[in-house]
Picture 1 (tube, rainbow, N blue to C red):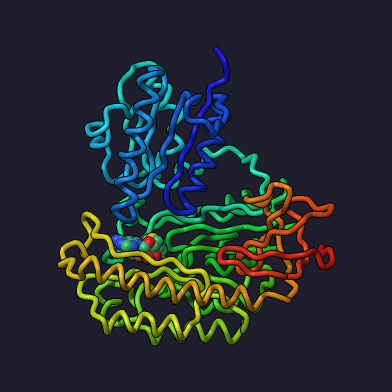
Picture 2: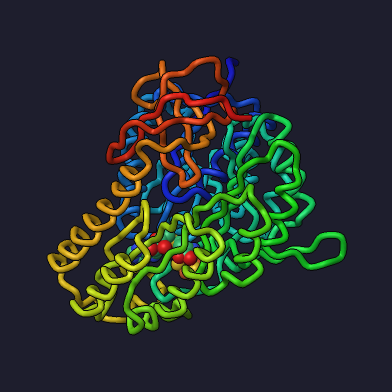
Length: 444
Ligand code: SAH
Ligand code: F3S
């Protein structure tokens, strides 16, 4: 029998991307799978799903429908569905789409090789969406990822229960990974050429670990990570403003490796809506936090997530959102139309903002956000930015792509550089989604 091939499609957040990469490592290790980019030649098709908004969920069944057609021509093909939709729907997925052979949740992805084997053996659908806490991390083999920037998941789940959000229901309660395991993962990535670590967690700044007998917050973990040789940049996402305590603010003073960019979702500019969302902060508190961080790093760049059209959101509430955008001057943010999710407290409230109002608000907000983001890009023109080379340019493989501190993409013509090098680039042009640069001097 030839080498088996797996195709993985990932929807949603960075945490899902991390999980998919780990699943691939496991399948390579345990079942000698090879990755393919061609669905038609795969023996196993995996969909790692997202259920954060209803559109994301609908995409799942459309995708399975397309894959079913391949399966009709190739009966040995197996289809696996994992992630948050799987966690939420469980065996209902197989009932609605019998072409699916394996269903697994965000906490059971390490079981996929076993579920696959069992399915081949018994020809019965295998479903495991249980929540064995952190068990999966014990099964991940050391990665062969040698990218310049790498995600490292440091905690799972969320206890915040924002009234609109499914994550606490699909990913379970917060639980932090062991600090030594995290540092080992970081060191092994650094040995393979990774220069930037991107810590992941749904509520990442509530990380609670312990190291050498003393409790370890995210701030402490960042300090420990900065000491790992060859790690020159550290990022983390997603932070909740409520958990952004003073020790984390202070770490911007102490650790130059921590980039001057943070994703700090505000969701809305109206205290009334924030209260209905159960976000646990007021706009005044949020703005105080921004000021505190900017007093340490005046060049700090902030990005955010926004929800428009939350139940009972008035024009006044929305105006307050535009106001906070103006005050903070966010860079590169994400904004979404509110989507009612099953089993969330907000789903009990009337979804009473009309579709046309929601769309209108979204358009207004997005045009304001993109103006601001483009403004930052334009201001960078003429400056020299220390950038990390992360890969080839998407549009022109003859060019390289690098990232600035605020995660903007810069395309440039290469000289003798390798992925993972830092380079000083003089920014010469700003486009909507990227920058163009020329090499200034070689950085270490
Ligand atoms: N842990 C993060 C967010 C995770 S979900 C935090 O602290 O905010 C990513 C983003 O999706 C959220 O910030 C929110 O803006 C959006 N989102 C979550 N649930 C949503 C829903 N029901 N409708 C619309 N957008 C939603
Ligand atoms: Fe969701 Fe709020 Fe947690 S947005 S992931 S419940 S912080």
